[in-house]
Amino acid sequence: MNSEVIQGVQRGGAAADEKVHKVTFLPFNKTVEARAGMSILDVALENGIDLEHNCGGNCACSTCHVIIKQGMEYLTPQNLDEEDQLDDADGLTLSSRLGCQAKILGDVVVEIPQCG
Image (cartoon, rainbow, N blue to C red; front, side):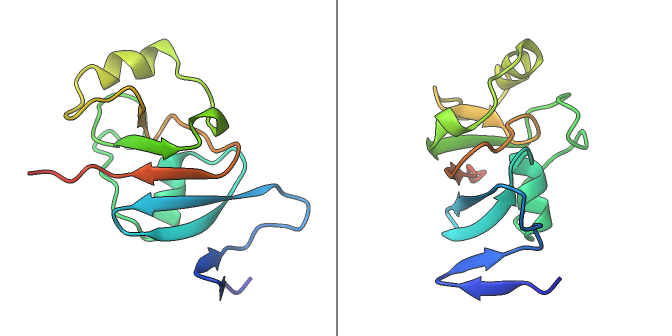
């Protein structure tokens, strides 16, 4: 399917019966559509957004650490493995998540912390 841009939102190839949500990535101010159940990491990679993931998205590091600015209630809950890995994340906040573990259930705004 072709992608199209409507009012600054990149539309992917989701089937008509799939739930689709908006994910905004900061600091890029890029809003994309994501199918329900996709991880933040998968959404980023599918849309050309650079999000480190040294372990390949297996919850074995904290390089895909993101900060949820809006919509924390629209993500799957953290599990103990994610909580343990987040302890090693730089710039940890109360709204920190691992992009490989947080799955989209609604519209969210995600900040990718900048190194340095």
